[in-house]
Length: 226
Ligand code: GLU
Image 1: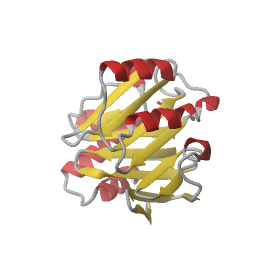
Image 2: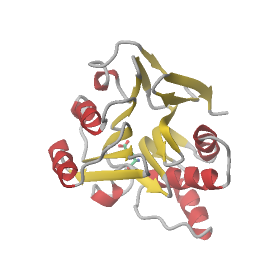
Image 3: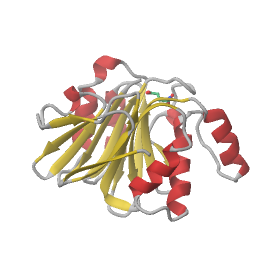
Image 4: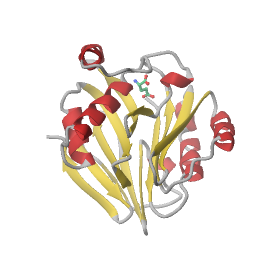
């Protein structure tokens, strides 16, 4: 289980997210990546190895945007390569995940039978497809789509989601894996551990089991996964 950082506000967030991930380096990781809403859609940059490699990848493909998520991965399902690095994308949805989706084999089969094309060996990519499917089915807000997707999932997770359909929002959710939310003036943060966001705010709250939250620059709306 490794690191998650998320940001929504008015600042360009790619460097902020990488800095936050750096504060979680002590947890160990094999690859890293970011997904940002660029204004027109969701774009990702990922790299195997140290965050310095992600820095280089971001120099080649700079990401511009003020809503984004970042991840350092400790592989549990699928080799540590770029295709398996997070964020995972399906349609306009990008997801980062800490933990393990236990029923990933059966969910993968169901998605493949419906014609979805999977591009990694991870358990996490399944969550991205389930959220994309719920979004396409018109299941309300991004938060509603995440709730509908996670209702099908068994396992331990902390997730952060950014979607083309919601330019100024991040949705986070947790079950048996921590998410802390940080509130600051005109910006809202989330992370898998406090050190990632401590530099920006001391106004923090931990989600409890089965909670999720929609983050905007003005704060967090906390709901349940039920
Ligand atoms: N199970 C996921 C994977 O293998 C997440 C690993 C993590 O917590 O970093 O990609």
